[in-house]
Length: 136
Image (cartoon, rainbow, N blue to C red; front, side):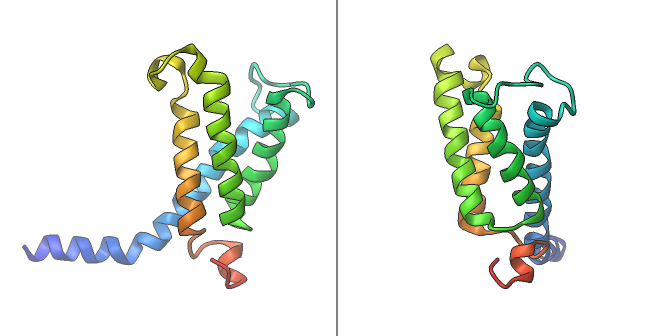
């Protein structure tokens, strides 16, 4: 029983740092969608997207918002906006193809939506610009 308590205490102690790691990795994964669309890296079917299209507009949010999430600057409002963006992406691009995210290829949009919603409420964590500014 002592080992379980020790694991729980360690997990509690590390929780804020792991939140920062989750934020950084989420931001990096999200950012690559924007860099692919606007910077051509990595190359994808969305590379060179028309900036005035829905995908192009989303790409700008991915590029700027992903960068801000990675560094942890203005995390709560940015995450809230990105959560809404991903909800819209799900309902516009995926839901018309069917109800189940597994079948309509909307799993990633749905997951991003809820992870960003989590950060909108919980904040950036200790390894962030927000924390350095006293705003985490």
